[in-house]
Structure formats: structure tokens, C-alpha cells
Image (cartoon, rainbow, N blue to C red; front, side):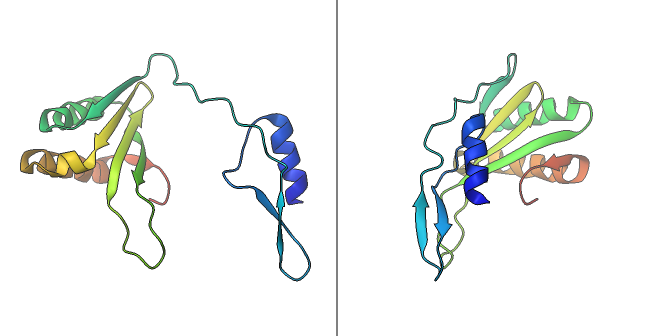
Length: 140
């Protein structure tokens, strides 16, 4: 079934899995499957979406102001961090992405945490979001 799915995904051009599929053989051995070899087309930003880098207290205030004026209260959220192994402590968030249909903010978390002013404003923004918004994202 995995090989059939991989073939369908490959022929549609919709998906490339980050690792090769492994075909399980009797006895538990895995055999590489080259069903997905062609790369995906690059993603394109939707026209008219403004992307803003957030690294200062003033940037956080501007982001917060724009989000509070957004109708509907739905904010897409994503976070990026350095990978870690199961036996290691989780690594801190490096980049926090917040988005509404017309705008996306990329929060440089390590930079924002270096200044008490921007750290406090970032904490206030996140507290407001957790109380007032429907957040869409992975594992929230």
C-alpha cells in the first residue's frame, strides 16, 4: 500500500517525502524504495502578502497592533527550533511565525529575548493571543 501511495503522490507532483519510503521485508528488514525522486515545485507567496521581520520592541508593538485590529481573531502560528534527540533537553524556539491572510510576521525569538523591553512586549503579545485568539498550528 505504501508503494502504491508513493506512486500516486509522485505522479501527481503533489508531494515528496523527506526520506525515501522503506519497504518492510519479512523478518523486519527495510529496503529502500525509490518511488519518490522528483523534487516539488517551489512554494510561492500569495500576491499581496506582506512579510515583516520582528526583532525590536517597536516591531513587536506594531505586530501586536496589527493583530488586534484583524477581524476574526484567527492567527496561524508556526515555530522553528534546532532539532534535538530524544535523550536531550528540547531546544528553544528560534523563529515564531504569525500570520493572517494579508500579513506574516517572523519573530526572531533569540534577538527579542536579549532586551527586557522587547522580551516583555513579546510575552504580552503571546499572552493576549492565548486569551483572545483562535490559534491554528501544530500541537497547540
